[in-house]
Length: 285
Ligand SMILES: NC(=O)c1ccc[n+]([C@@H]2O[C@H](COP(=O)([O-])OP(=O)(O)OC[C@H]3O[C@@H](n4cnc5c(N)ncnc54)[C@H](O)[C@@H]3O)[C@@H](O)[C@H]2O)c1
Image (cartoon, rainbow, N blue to C red; front, side, top):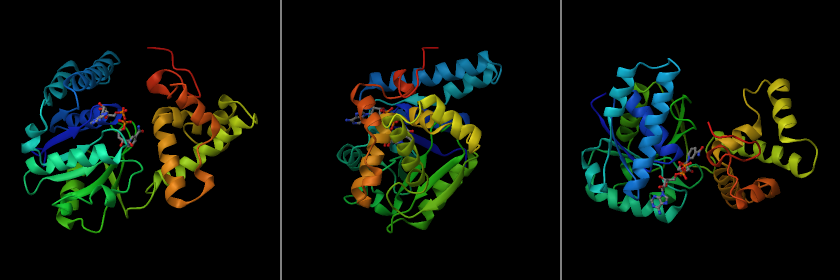
């Protein structure tokens, strides 16, 4: 199984983490991004994280170098032709993702599996124009993919059971636990998590308590390992807003309408950890 070749499309927060996770688990991993400089930056971030693990004594220098050696930037999507599994993790935009799948379908081998890491788009709709929808599924990782064990596998009707098994085998070789979910807004985790985050943000809007107090309350009073607004900052407030808007539209409920504080922070470019400021501050370093 470890001789399977992985392709990762997109090298942002999730694409970079997904590529790192596969390489850490022994898989040769190719990374493509819309501009080569983005892929270079994404892979540089992976290398920095690995160097930090070496500094902290969590990883040996030789292991870190081996992991780095398994990650290769490819300039052209055609270079992913040898991949057995490709995971797409570009921006949450249906047309951008469809255009990439359209190009990938022309280069991938017939048995290669194609997965999308979408958080909120319909996997069935994403598959609509594919000529080989049997090999297409949602492979939904959680942030950071190197640490979180769960992967949701979203299974549209057209999915071929052998393709699902191939994806499961590769993920299991990475130590991941998978749950299989029908294509439905928010799948399992986001359907339950985002209304919770949104309610926490509404408490901020209403001046009921500060983000610090809300997070402290849920950690100490409900035994959550991290508070809802810390989790929102980690996911990215732009991503949270997008998922909430999709849930609101597809489930037809005002309950999911993004809280004002989420909308205002995103409009101000305060996207959470990745921008250094969200509900909380994240000073550099
Ligand atoms: N952030 C999370 O916690 C999380 C968790 C699970 C799934 N996801 C999903 O993963 C995907 C990526 O999210 P992210 O948080 O890594 O976002 P990000 O903003 O960190 O990265 C986006 C990536 O898309 C690329 N990109 C931007 N414009 C593009 C274009 N026009 N064409 C092709 N590529 C383009 C960027 O170069 C970058 O590599 C999204 O579908 C998101 O919903 C995110």
